Length: 80
Image (tube, rainbow, N blue to C red; front, side, top):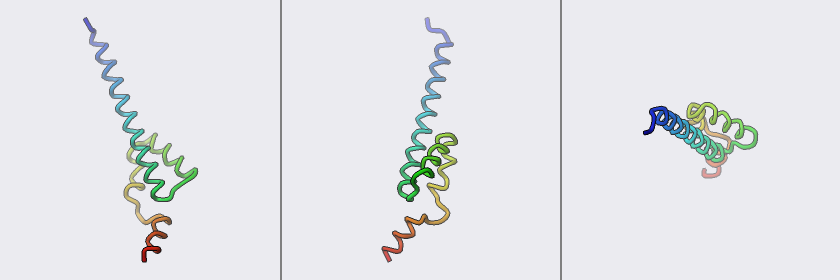
């Protein structure tokens, strides 16, 4: 017979793994957006660490930037 404690431990592990995967996925998204926006070096690393610590709230400015990044401005100038 399996005790109810076993199920609580299993549920806790599942919740922890799910949250860990969520935060890792947020870091992957942050990395791709930083690369696309031309953000590199130490700034990218710090942004990834911030996203790992705080989750999707850190992605707001990467997903919906207020203004174009310098790389995007250069691309727009080349198209014109």
